[in-house]
Image (tube, rainbow, N blue to C red; front, side):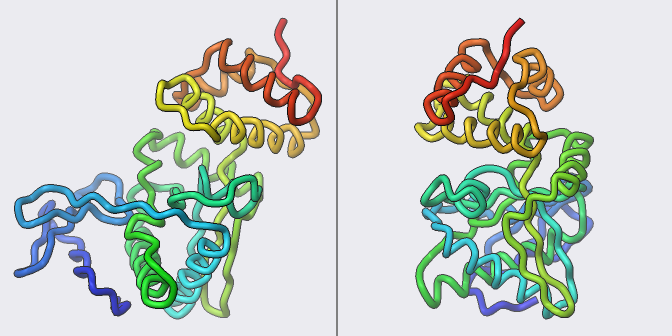
Length: 264
């Protein structure tokens, strides 16, 4: 599907793991594994090309998603995706001014829909670049699925639909895109995992508080036990410590004047 992009067209699915066209970069294609968006482009020496990140504010993300929706509508495709991370904060919660990408996943990592979703995202990036400025080839990507098992991915996608928090949507007469927020408990555990690491970012604890607050509101709860949170983290394969939970409780108390994480 053409979109007028100056970047090389991604190779079409083939039996071999890599398809190369004369004079163009190579796109590594799936051979039964997860389908990556964008695909891994390689230079002439075979080394992966690293995509540059750009800060995307709320208006830019919405405009880019609307372009994706229009592209999909023209092709009669309805795309339902789940997003986790900064796009939720920037677009839905409006607790951050910007983020550098929209992390998404589908229920199935090998779904054929990834191809047209990639084409739509690439068309959107080209439109933004020609009219307003660069947003990057990696602005809409599904690298987050590499951090979750296939069974967890399917379960999270189903839970996101049940939670029914729509970050953004564009619906045309023939198709479009609906972007759901990942389950709050999963997003919260992801932040707890980050806070356990040495590369935690300044906004991670604020994000953790926001996600926990949304979980409590959605489930009409005022507290959640530390034991329950630790079980969530085990289920999702995330790390957590008592010290991190204490930090979150303290920050939550600063923001909302209550400590929701209870201990025996």
